[in-house]
Image (spheres, rainbow, N blue to C red):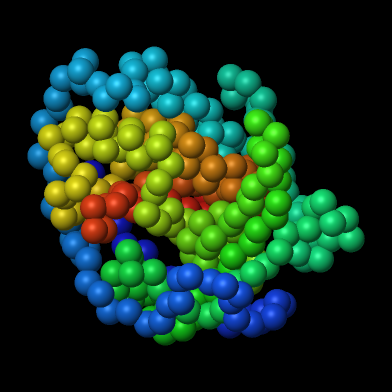
Length: 277
């Protein structure tokens, strides 16, 4: 596992929504709260452990499925067509625009933008200048919601919470910067049970690591079993679908996945690069 820090260029942008948040419980401003972030983290001493005694939420079969699913997404992203794929790609290019969500003529398809403001970088990434990301109030924070019907017939809110900056997405959406600038996708304070359990109970223990006590930034490199297993989890597949929906196949690659902890919570970063030649 090796560290990789990529310099990013900045750009301007304009907003299309009304400013401010309505009933937002997470008012934020600039923060200099430090985290255990290593500019040049040392490589973990590989000490594979016996994973026969897995966490109850994980089985060998599930891990094998993660690896297979991750391999499929890796191949779909890399290959311009399905010629070398075990099965056809299940993600079609997306042409959906933000305005089509928040200004849809069909009430059943319209999302309510109940928070829209410019804020600082998330505390969880520590000093954004280490990645040449903005250090001021240059991150667009957007909350969307729409009523939906659950499987049991109950009605509840579907919600999206995220923020974007030039070249970086802190969730699953990029409405205010050109998608072709995208280099980073962050998944902050991971609560998805499948992905979190895999990292905490399988991936880190595999190398003698404990997520909650680890102070290093860990890099899981492209085309390794660790990488493919991460790509096959719920959040890995979501980022894979984002890349497949946003870019022509074969034009981008998720070159590595980074993980670290902040206040004991799992954080993730997916690094995306152009493919040349």
